[in-house]
Image: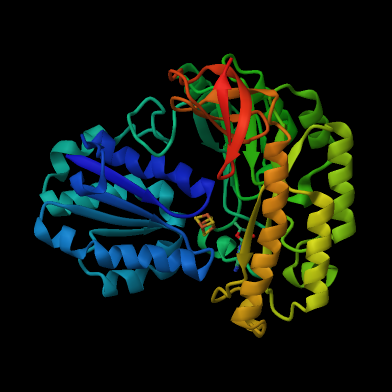
Length: 434
Ligand code: 5AD
Ligand code: SF4
């Protein structure tokens, strides 16, 4: 029996793909090379913007013939859009075997077992096998969506923030932190299985805190240091920090710990204070830039990337020009820019979505043109220099500061390799192994 997992959305969603696969792998499914070969498909959906949701819904529709060709096939719809639209999905697509939302991920193994049992009428004989389902996918398992070399470790779920545009708090719930020892144990296990880079994940990852077994409270910077100190771990990254929790202790951790903080993704969303207030981001453009200055003073070579929304309700040309100005000052190494998409039930959905579609489109392309230039400049600055690359999968990998690199040489996955950068193509450095 073959399994295929399709993931939409963020890194956390991608990391959940491992957990979504685990009960099926434990039941004997193996990774399918291609979706056509699969006997079971798990769709891990996203709802952050309408477009993301539409892509998942359209795929559920397109899978109908595949599903109906063979009654033994299994279709599971999970994740954030499943949380938001569960009942509607069940009604609209009755051939889906199981719809399970992001908040129910802890119950997921049991729900899968029930759904499979209902399907195959085999609950009794297999129940015992399900007592010890790993909380995350074994990094050594031959599954294509998470490379064993770069291993995600989810350290918290949910979000206590209430950015006015964002659906995440409602589909993922309040923050829940994984215990200090559990996170370290998972990172150690993944390092022992061959991971060289650990990617700590959370919706506002730097708000993580938890009491250790000794009763002492740990905060994120301490966790970061502890993960960086694990044998075999060459790099630690974290996604996504919220500027509000980026305190001096974290700045000092990223400046002082080798392998951590060469690149930080720091979503800003807008450069207009009026928009930032209406978004409820809890910082101004000036305080954001001053944070960036402090980070760069502590770690001058750091590469920063960001997320920006254009066309938030009532965004004027003046507001947008402040976003362009902020981008000029931040000079992000790469940028994810999005057109505002109203999400039902969020605070901003009650505001009029009054920036016309063509204006949103035009602002997006102006912003992208600017940020593409920064991205290209960052890559071109490397040409003629050697960079240290972690080989993720045979001649493809990333530099310490997150730039993608391709080079023509025998694969040595998991190895740190020196590459001479010779050119740039499609946001990737091209190079030669040294
Ligand atoms: N519309 C557009 N972009 C959004 N994001 C989150 N919610 C919305 C929305 N309603 C963007 C933010 C966030 C990223 C993951 O998605 O930039 O950082
Ligand atoms: Fe999408 Fe947000 Fe869910 Fe990630 S947390 S999958 S971005 S809705």
